[in-house]
Length: 111
Image (cartoon, rainbow, N blue to C red):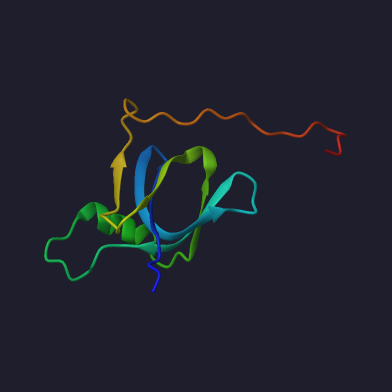
């Protein structure tokens, strides 16, 4: 039986760095977005509870699919198994956003 791949997605959101794990990631039909589905969180049976992961679980509770802007993505890795998701403050000294330009079609152009 084939093992379903797990992806670690790191992205910036409102001044914080999010690190989440998911089994389905693909380019959205909406221009400039990545779709993330099938979120993976740690086992609830653990004795030690990580407050950062709990905050992440609460934020994504009930979310079937998330659309993340491409320019907010820092990195996507395919990993052997899921790890601990977390939200941390963005310090700005180790992560730089990918430079992007605004896409605006010229008025009156059909292409």
